[in-house]
Image 1 (tube, rainbow, N blue to C red):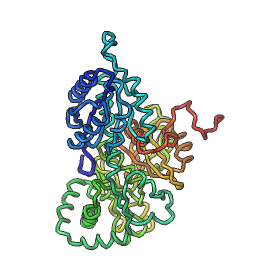
Image 2 (image 1 turned 45 degrees about the vertical axis):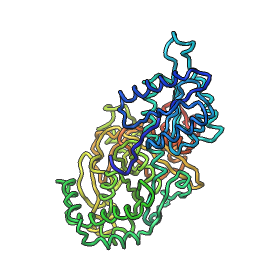
Image 3 (image 1 turned 30 degrees about the vertical axis):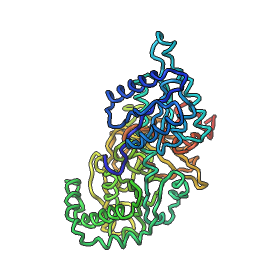
Image 4 (image 1 turned 120 degrees about the vertical axis):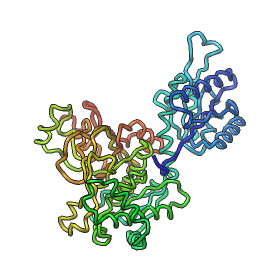
Length: 495
């Protein structure tokens, strides 16, 4: 989608225990690569041809080969039982995300010299990984034939992308969180634990940079692009030049400040003094940058920005950040949802933000003013929101968060945006998530999550769960919407 997300090449290295026939691993690796290429193409993988890893010397040779080939992720493939020490040393010394999978037996007619026992070898591999404190992705059922293992590697791809990207990410933030807005406050220590860098700036620094971009020669070109995007929704043409000036300010800041990092995300300020000093709200610009793969969160929500970035990489698509905002009125539910779906009233809610969702993810859009801010400020300084109903379709609502005592916690819930007109303002949609009411009470509230949640447009729960596990979130701290009949620990059993 953009150059703010990594391109992965997974090196496939087959291993063999020296008391098992080496051709088992050689032939099974070839079959695996052939199966992957046939189904998914050859762009994402590299077959290490140097050797079958049976020893520590072979491990070093394979490691050098995949590095030379430009691999930034690793698949250790147990073609037979495998050398538990050498194969886990390979994972230890490879600097990047890694996975393990193993070959199933092919036929009941080849269980003498053709039996590989990789089913057994995976147990030893996992034990050795734990002994060495090595993180690795292991599929739900990690043993299969060539086609099965090809699917496993493909499932690993978005996980590997996210893990790699986090280790090469810089978050740029502007300003402290607004007054009386502690909800998105969280310690940054966990960012460093994840391998993420952060550059915290004052909004005064941003304002200075913005003023220096006055009369920038590129502004007319950006305004023309905005006009093309908005079309008939261009209801505030008088504000576009200022918004273009701000967009150029952010993009230039990113280029000047990304340093040695490959990828960038932004946690921006948008109130309370932003409107009166800049003369607009930045929502539309935030939506445009997010649409290019550079997530920009509102209200200096650093972990919201981090969550958006993860979703952008995993989904290879545009994401957004929304408030888990308001309930759906009963009359609206009864007239437009009840009987047309299986969702209950408490399964539904509205996700909203002022105007930060990319136009490509809206059913329609118009440039407007920020209605909430305009209740206490002149309308002309609140212009700059992109309003419209979010397009119907499948979504994943999720967030990665550090708690106040520095524990990583997350949630993932799959659902959909319903084809129901919101009759409201902002970037907004009617969301439905099975058993949302219980999830809202017994995970979101109980675990102290802020109101901001990231939204990926599609169902990506499987990959996000594996990403969160890989980067170190304890599985007991990854919440999801429990099905009916599965009780949350804090749920009253007589409720």
